[in-house]
Image (cartoon, rainbow, N blue to C red):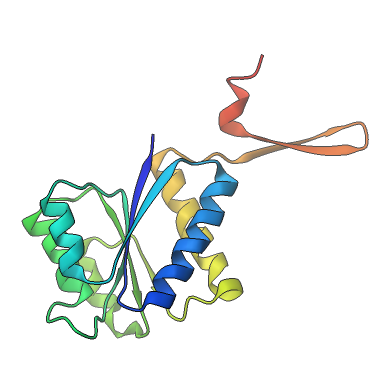
Length: 161
């Protein structure tokens, strides 16, 4: 299964950093994925209207040049597009939106700035939680072989002979 991910943030550096972090995390988890990056909520909605499906959406709340904020875009995804399966992770500089996110069935909330070391742990936790809920979590089985410590992805154990 290929995990379809959308990142929607008008701050190019934040979108790029989030994309890099996701590429690293999914590479470690050996999960197949595709990432589309959008800089406006309208672009994301247009792509979804054209038939695109996303499993996981990272959605900024405050867009500088748009009338609709990320919460309103989330409502469009849920109500207009009738997409209640996509997991939406909201991103913002402000905590004040937290209560507004319940209406859109948010999956998680990340506070900016998304700095490489500091936020990576939070992003990893979000991804781990999503993979567990979706049944894609690989997990690791660790064992000793002589003096070596070996790790095997749990999902690979059934395919080994």
